[in-house]
Each structure stands twice: as structure tokens, then as C-alpha cells.
Image 1 (cartoon, rainbow, N blue to C red):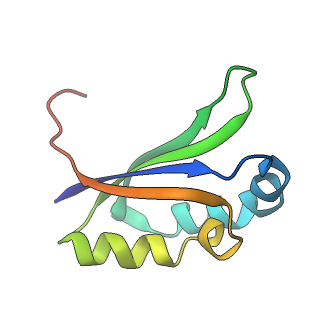
Image 2 (cartoon, rainbow, N blue to C red):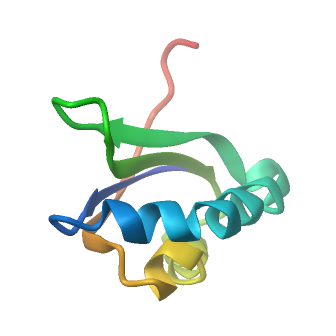
Length: 91
């Protein structure tokens, strides 16, 4: 099952994102086949302001568990996180 994780950073949290980026990227890389693609959303100035991650998981509970263990979550970076079932058509 594919799940899109869409997260929006708290306003003014770019320093929190940068301080925790290495741990977050290591978590992504350590997740093996669970991560299909991932990257930050950018604001008008080209600065990181959120995340899009496509998870390949057995069910929504696995996606929720993955999201709960993200170092960005532990750092309190996100204003909101949405997990949505997703259907790959192209790419």
C-alpha cells in the first residue's frame, strides 16, 4: 500500500529542520524499501518548509508508526502531518 505523507513545518522552524536534517535523512535511508521517494516542499524563497514522503507499507498503521518515529516529529518541526493513501499511475 502506498501512502503519501505530507507535512507542513511550523512557521519560523527552518533552523529546527536544518538542525535535525542529518538524523531525518539517516532515518529515511535506514528505512529500506519503505521509502519510494522523499523530499522537502519549498517556499517562495526556495527554503525548505515541509516534506513529501511516499511510503510503501502494509497498512495505514505501519505508516503511522513510521511517521511517529521520524526525527523531525521528535524535534517538533511539523505544524501538521497528513497521511493519505496514494495510487501510483506514472513514474
